[in-house]
Length: 327
Length: 281
Image 1: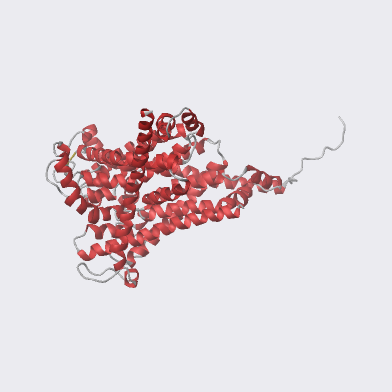
Image 2: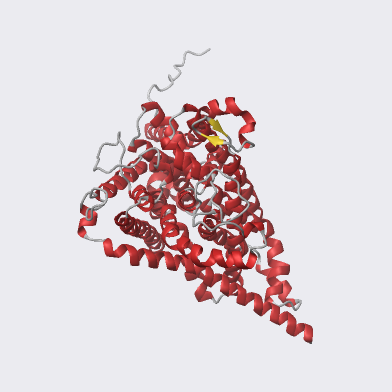
């Protein structure tokens, strides 16, 4: 043991500037973490508040809420079947109209159109997505419905009147009016995601088909579309998700009647429209709770639909933001 | 030989149908814009922007209260939504392997697909039901919730575009990580982040559904965020569904103003992106 004096560990760190930097890093990361944590926290809170608001109605009706079709705020009896039916019917109607159109546009723009046309047309149709829902509603009430009532609906009844879908008295506001406005609204989403998916198909697919003597259309149907299939289905489901939750335009055009009608000319109601119309005027606790229950169900359905769409799109355009920008 | 002609014909027919689809798809936008201008432009005057609404049934007046309301409500949404959205976006880009990143990104996608009316119900349950009165603040919270996922995703995507060499260069010069992030990486993507913010504002500025039972709407000029407040989309809705001819004219004019605001914001967003490209050479 020597008595040599060991140097005491320095009390002042020699790396003050580094430590200060470290401190800054810690604060920086803490702030960002708070922001990043806020997002899932808010969603958890949203789910809780919806459930909490709906608890009264869930306790009262349970699952029977979904199968009952009485909606009578005065007698405090609530069943959401007509709303669920209306939501599904109007959205499917929108898809029937919008899918061929938007996929036609998407295929034309990626596979056939002259280069100079592609960007402008896509931009122009994309503008549809920027128009607020309430403006669609306004246009629907004063331009679309008069047009449908005087020309399109009578024509449909005369030509396709043998189907129950096109029978009965013609009102202006109806399931079909809502379906048409929804079709216009979801078209830009299906088109833009469909385009992204088609652009992600490798060129070798097309070249191989063309080299075997296929016409350009055959190359699309045999080599491009099968490759992009799941992505295109994803784009369609994405459009469905949009249509399910769309509120204002539908509220203004669907006629708002708690009924299930076979005819597309008859008024209907959707989940979102019922919430929009009745929420601020509901007085009874049970009425409010029933509407919150409807909101809760709508939330669950859109989450499932959107998650499915996202997975399908990822299968083709891996990691692409295509879905997330439109979702 | 015949078959070949037939196959050619089918191909041409399909192309023709698709061109038809393009034309049909462009018609609605054309007619919506045309109708907005034809029916709305006539009612636009200085009074429309500066005056309060006239009593129901009378002519004249304007929507000044709704313009101020929209500005306040959207402004407050930005104050709430932008810091959270941008902060969470930077987090997701800077710590891509963290589990929180995965959760946050997934949740943002879920929220992006949530119908705006559901978010409105949430804001109602959280704020309006507790306070027992409608307030503009509740509307702002709902709109902020809608803008967070959009801002988050664009911020993240934009930051991911920054080449790693830039980050390494800053670190090699002895910059701490936070300064590297803020003054080098985020700075380089600022125009892109602004674009995301502007697009988000463009989208929420036209939102009506979440405001129906939060900000509620009002016929008076109000600067009190704790009280009901008018907003342009709500005005369009009320006037469009109201019984008066005069209201309908104002609905068209208000819708035209709304569309112009939204399109100008989108245009501004595009210009911000263009500037980024020229900056990067």
